Length: 225
Image 1 (cartoon, one colour):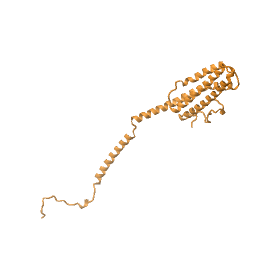
Image 2 (cartoon, one colour):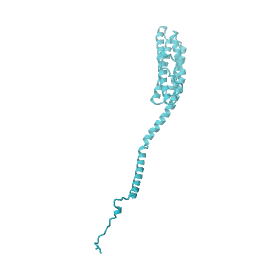
Image 3 (tube, rainbow, N blue to C red):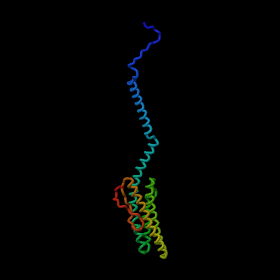
Image 4 (cartoon, rainbow, N blue to C red):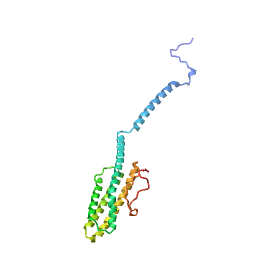
């Protein structure tokens, strides 16, 4: 008969030696993986979500882009109207200064009024992107230069005949410069129109290609690229 010692007696279950409670561990691992995934998704959402400042900037940029497209369309229409006003005057000045004719004071006054009307759309220009502002500023500069040519012609009509030749020469050079400035602005306008998705818009003057002015490209009107 075995003697009791008063201490618990343990028996080794050799069949379970080395075995792990895999089911329990698998369940715990699954919970950990789920929590990790949820935390990771939450962190990713917080990191990827634009904050209020970024959202405001994006909204402003979108509004500016929409505004610029509208401004370009309006500037194209303005350029067409102004071109139709200025082109006949520049063509007439070229004829008047090349033909040796005496300046006509009545014509000068009429052309000065045309130039005032042509300059009116540029008196209070809206603020746009740099590219649009450059195109608008170029058109305005061309009109101002054409106005100076007309003023020089008007002066030639008011001075003695001996002084007319110099003033008519200035008139011719200013008129040619106005056409050159317009061609640069028209090229810029064509480019921003393409960039805005409105296709090529060739608002050029009918000028002598040997006079230094830029000419439109061969792209079809309204096409892009």
